[in-house]
Each structure stands twice: as structure tokens, then as C-alpha cells.
Amino acid sequence: MTKNNPSCPRCQGRGWYEGPYYGNLQPSVEMMVCEDCNTVGKPSRAEVVFIGVCFVVFFVLMLMGAAS
Image 1 (cartoon, rainbow, N blue to C red):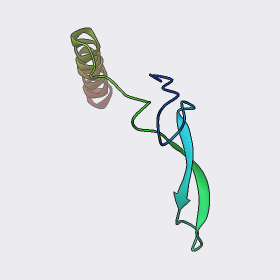
Image 2 (tube, rainbow, N blue to C red):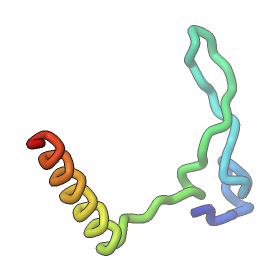
Image 3 (tube, helix red, strand yellow):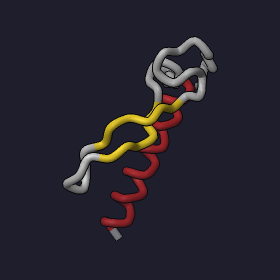
């Protein structure tokens, strides 16, 4: 979630900044996400339960498919 902080020294409220990238055997500039303005919260209890139930369902389906 972007805070849109216009006083952010890194991105000036845009949510991204141009930072150095050292891939492909040559240095270049790449748009990077500002970690101060874009935060990711912890998953809620309902999301964790949903992912757990999906994992169990898919695991049972996989075992049923292997048995037949």
C-alpha cells in the first residue's frame, strides 16, 4: 500500500525511484520500489486459514489421483 508521502527523501511520493542495477554484465539504472512508501502487511487469520484449507484439498486430490 502506497502512503504517498511527498516528503520521502527517496521517491518524493511516487512509490518508486531510479536505482542502480548491476545485471547483464553492465551497470544500468532501473525503476525500484520504495520500501518506505510501499509496505506489505501481514496476512489476516482468514487468509492463512484459506491457504491452509486449499493446501489440504489439493494434497487430498493429488493422493486420490495417485491412487487411481
